[in-house]
Length: 99
Image 1 (tube, rainbow, N blue to C red):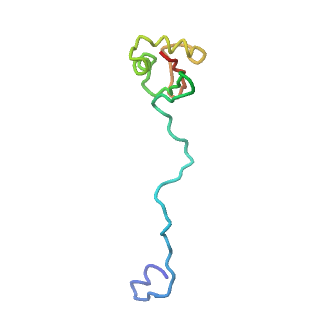
Image 2 (tube, helix red, strand yellow):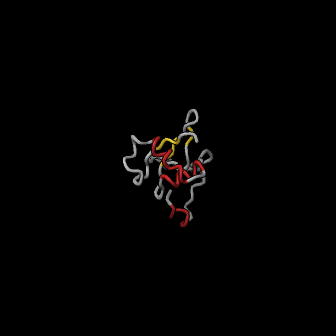
Image 3 (cartoon, helix red, strand yellow):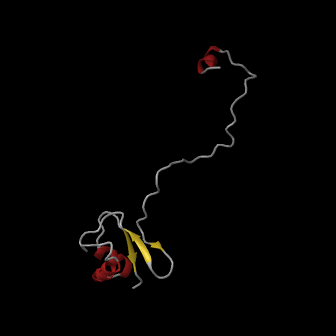
């Protein structure tokens, strides 16, 4: 039966109707989840942080240690990843040592 059959009055009373009682709302995606913008806890006292757009070592140091001047601690802990302390990039995963 089509949608226009009802308009014509040709409804079939015995036709089975679909059962949607078990349908759940939500979505499904194969896209990767967004990168975290806050530090992610790791084992022990060390943590990691994913750099986001607009970050600098001093901004991260201010957020993590309460003192922007401790940027050098972050730099020293990540020397193998950071060649120039003025150039960090969104998506970089930095080690954040305990203060």
